[in-house]
Image (cartoon, rainbow, N blue to C red):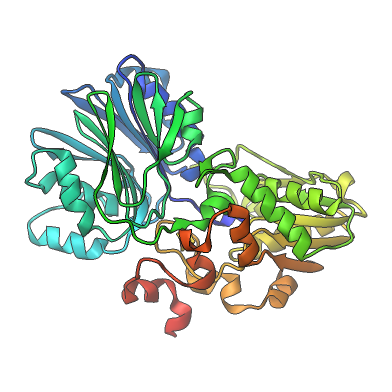
Length: 467
Ligand code: SF4
């Protein structure tokens, strides 16, 4: 259930001499808003000076027209954040700015380091005082403290010190860098915009401003934009490519392209495979909006059962800073979804969703559909059971909270109250991506973490095993 998984972050950077880079970044962050709704920031630079504006909230809440007009320059770095490392407060919002060689270095990060404590401890021992609790500040401080004159050389020094997932946008008064960790866990791509260039977590960030997709930054590679030129440098040897499979299942927008595939098409394929793996007699195939839509269309096409929308999403609930009253909180999933009772009453439903995390939301939805008069509810999930937590920048849950970590599929079916439940097989999930299994991190399903996770970290998130 996508409502239960929180994405980590979105990164965007642009170099464009003849355009309003702050406004372009604003629109790109709008397109990347699904990757984080807690805070947003834009820094701009003009070759000599730089300035930044960031705050808690969503893109539309934070920036006014006047704010954007005050951000002048020909380079910009933007970020939308959902907290994974470090809690939710202003100091942790990004980009993170640190003084460097008479100017500034700004860092925007998608991912999660697994050696933050160690690096932070080393820096604190050298007298560094941190303003935030985020791993991104550690990266920014390392870049700032490098003896290298050039930020490109500084980044080359720092990259080997970092362990974990990092797709970074880095900006100084002169240059923009796009950096991807040697495993390529989080996405990052490059586009061409007019006479300049763009870096974005997803290609949808390019589309919204009319930039042309160039290519993904390869694992271990750095894209350097300076003086209107783009070049790539391989900094670290690429390890086993391990793009997070959840980008394909749910995180990224369906109109984004990864590994050369529209995610919409991959998700539709997942639904088609679900129909092959778990056919059922039913009247309607309906998605949990919005993320279940492509897979539900695929299921419908493969099974011949008509597609229908039975749940309407309130698109504007999002993240609000107004605390709901107890009475409103009790409405639970009804705050986000409302059933079309007349379309559901007496119907046998196939309900397609992308995942089940804790199971409580799915249980509420099944109950809501039954209360609306559904005669049967058959849940179909376009991913395998989610059994292991993420250490690379996705806030799912600790292992103990993941329902599939301790219950069988039949027990989960019973818990959520569905008539039948089926999860897509790993084999068909991988087939839907069009790429080999070896190119993905699928640790949520099989516990095989591509970057070894320190035991203390594992114990903290896997209390089930520790007791
Ligand atoms: Fe993605 Fe799961 Fe791997 Fe994290 S552990 S990167 S969520 S597949």
